[in-house]
Length: 467
Ligand code: 6PG
Image (cartoon, rainbow, N blue to C red):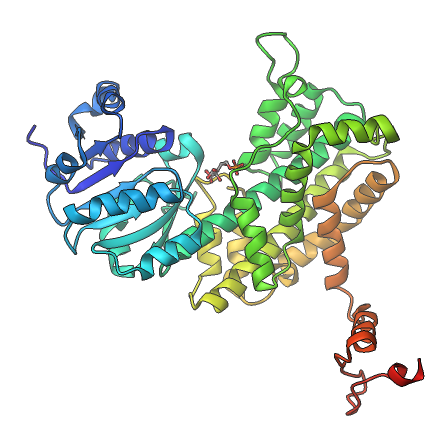
């Protein structure tokens, strides 16, 4: 084997294998290693026309030896301890100019910790979105770490990334340390929310309008031609149309309604709480997954109280408008959280740049992200709901969201994501809210003080002594 390369990859699971083939296909030879040698051998044998660009290695030492310094080694191993273990195993083998890239779904706090740990090699944390298909043919890539390290690998990352319609590669450096993994985490939070809102709308069609899955699939497919054009709406149409080869029933009708999760949505919700940045749609989506997993409890609830969802009076067009409104509200919250994190963590997170990276390759890719990128470029610090394009859209669609949520509430459909988006919006547009009551209560029981509307220098109520 005479192929020269300085790029290697560890971990030939689904994502690692797909990413390695993508890299090879774009003209970069790659040395690979997997803990199980048979997996490496099979991967090499199955690489087809790319076999010559793949260098299989059977030990960590031979992987490192196969790479010309300065080396770049991409880790595609499970997040958490496995990454620390792999870094520790590589440490004695690598030099200070060699670069390790953690391309898994790491918790960005771990990436911050690793970046600050003074590792004996260079280190980048990189979020990769798009599932197996994306990794193989063009993911969205969110890099974090030292800019110079990113610049070193940018030619590879840009070559393997998806391209937006204008040809821009969806691979960008987000900021130092864990910035890339942070942006990927929020991406996943939004992914949870998008999925949950689609599921809520699906539920209204299935249980409230007694629509058959095929018809629901047709509706989603129609929406995918308009403002909601997106990967998740597209695949929702596909799954609603699919039939179970075992029973001939619709696939959706045979799948258990208990959602799994690996934790990135939860991390987003936890971080938002730390940042005091409201992301109720994402939090509702995480909550809904948790409730969905409590099958026995839900069945006991149905036995005791009767099934909740009843017939609703809604048009599909109203559902479409409600989903558009919910999506805008959710993304407005997500981008505001990213903005807050940038300030809290000292990252100069480029909001329009993030919207641009999400336009292709990733799971939340959608037509609307083009408009979001433009609105954020206009004024990144203004909440997206106040950008004129989206304010106009909300004015046109919130009435439908309100009708959808109220029909859901009246007729027993749990719509936590859509409803919490609407509640947040109504609070956001209320200049005089009700927290004066909270402040009065806090002062009453704890003498915490309050500010007055008239600005006078009197910060406690008369209640303490009056009893
Ligand atoms: C992506 C996805 C991916 C995620 C899966 C499953 O951007 O490609 O977000 O990273 O791991 O979608 O996530 P859950 O198991 O948490 O649903």
